[in-house]
Length: 425
Ligand code: GDP
Ligand code: IMO
Ligand code: MG
Image (cartoon, rainbow, N blue to C red):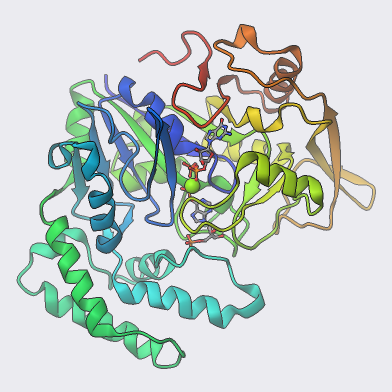
C-alpha cells in the first residue's frame, strides 16, 4: 500500500528541510509541498553547487520523481518564473517532473504591497514578515475572494484579476506606498506565460492514484511548527498550518495514509523576524553561533537570531505533529565549543513547568542543562560519533521519547548520517 511520510520543521523554520528532502527524495516516487509559498527558502548543496528553492519542491534535482505543488500552497507566478529560469543550467525536464494544483491560490503583486502596508502600520509590533504576500493571499483565500491557479485558463481571468487588484488598491489608498501598477500588472501577466507551460491539474487525484498503486509520497513542510497559525507564537507566525495535519488538507490525502512523520530540528535554535524566543542568546555567544552556523535568511538575507535548544518547545512540536523520527541538523556548528546548553524546563514564581505558555513568555526563568561539546569530523555512522555527541543525542531521545535517526554534519548532501536501516520503504 502507498504511504505518505511528512518531513517538517519543529522550530521557527530553516532547520534544514530542503537538504534532507533532497537527501531522502531518491527513496520516494513523489515529493509534494503542502503549504506556504515563496516565504520559504530551502537550501540544497551537492556537487559543489548551492541552490535555494522557494516554491518548487526539493525533490526536483532527482530524475524519475514527480514534484507536486499542492493545493495548500500560495504561489507567486513572478517568483515561480524566476525559479524556473534559475534552474535552466541544470537541464532538468521540469515540465515532466513538476505539476501544480489547480486549487493553489495565486499571489498577485498587490498582495505583496498589502503585506508591506500591514507591516508598516503595525509599527513596533511588526511580525517581521518576508513580505512575499503570504498573509494577504491566505486572507483572501479564507475570505473566499482569492484566485486559484485553475482560474488562469478561464476566459474572464483578466477581469477577475482586475477585480481583486482593485479591491487591494482601494485598501492601499490609505497607505503611503510608492508603486507603478501598470508595470506590476505587466510583469505578472508575462510570468503567467511561464506558468502555463506546466500541468495545472487536480493533484489530489494524481497523488491518491499514486497511493493506490503503492507509491510513496514525501510531503515537504515549509516554515516550522512554532510558526504555525494555531499553535505557534501567535501573532508572530505565518498564515498556514505548518504542522503535520496541514499535509492532509494541503494535498488532499486522508490522515490514515500518513505513516512516518520526520521532525527536523537544529542542535540549537534560530528565528528570523520578530516575536518571542525564550532561549535567544543576546550576547557574544549568540553572535558566535550566527557566524559558525552562517545563520542568514535564505529568502531575505536577514541575520537569524540564535540561541540554545529549547526542549519543552521541541517536545510540544513533537506532540502536535506525532513525530515518529527525529532528525538533528548542524551538529558541526556546536563542535569544539567550550560549553553547550539546552533549556530543559521553565520556572515562574518558584513553580516549574515544561509546558509552553500561551505567549511563549520570555520573562519566565529558564532551567538549563550543560553538555560537553564534541570534536568536529566527517562521521559516516552513528557508531563513529564521539561520546559527547552520542550523549547529547541520548539525552534528547530520553527527554522527547522519540528515536533520533538522522544527524547532519554539514550543508552538503553527503554530510548526512542515517542510522542503519531506519528509513526502509
Ligand atoms: P530550510 O528552510 O529548513 O530548508 O533551511 P534553510 O535552507 O533556510 O537553512 C538551513 C541552512 O543550513 C542552509 O544554509 C543549509 O545549507 C545549512 N545546513 C543544513 N544542514 C547543515 C549542517 O548540518 N551543517 C551546517 N553547517 N549547515 C547546514
Ligand atoms: P522555511 O521554509 C524561517 C517567518 C518570517 C516572519 C514570519 C511571518 O525556509 O523554513 P510570512 O512571510 O510568512 O508572513 O512571515 O514567519 N518565516 C520564516 N522563518 N523560515 C521560513 O521558511 C519562514 N517563512 C516565514 O520571518 O517572522
Ligand atoms: Mg529556509
